[in-house]
Amino acid sequence: MTIKEIQQDIVDEFSMFDDWMQRYEYMIELGKSLPLIDDAYKTDDNLIKGCQSKVWVHAELSDEKLLFTADSDAIITKGIIAILIRAFSGHKPQEIINADTAFIDEIGLKEHLSPTRANGLVNMIKQLKMYAIAYQTQLN
Image 1 (spheres, rainbow, N blue to C red):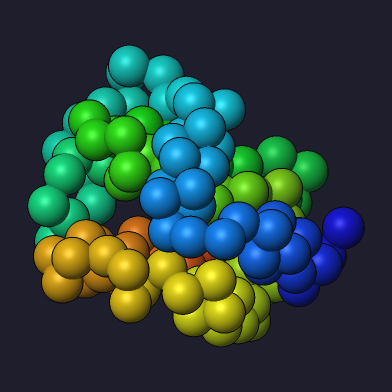
Image 2 (spheres, rainbow, N blue to C red; image 1 turned 180 degrees about the vertical axis):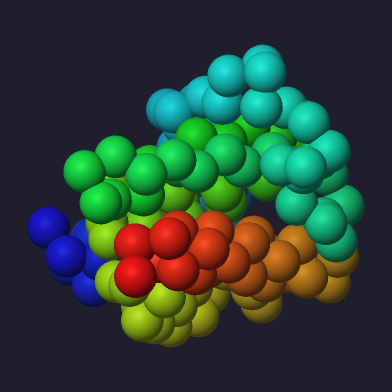
């Protein structure tokens, strides 16, 4: 599946819920299915700066595709990073760099987060794209 198709699936899934309490519960469930980061990667280097909660993300290149693992000490934040990893993990760095993140606005995530969490979301996206840029540079 392309990143765009995965993002559309996520938008479709969120549209099935009537209210934000159900969507939060769904995000918490998504967080539980997150590919967990190895404890060895829970370091300050992998900590996303500017997040209210602690969020660690690790990226590695396998068959020219980026694979992300992550963890957070907060259940909602864990759900947010799970959504982003679902959208981007398993794709080539250039695809991640070029990917649009409008699906976040389509599901209404930013407007239903506190300002600090919304800021953290932006920083998570930025960090995933920075990993993609770093690995793309290695491939060139």
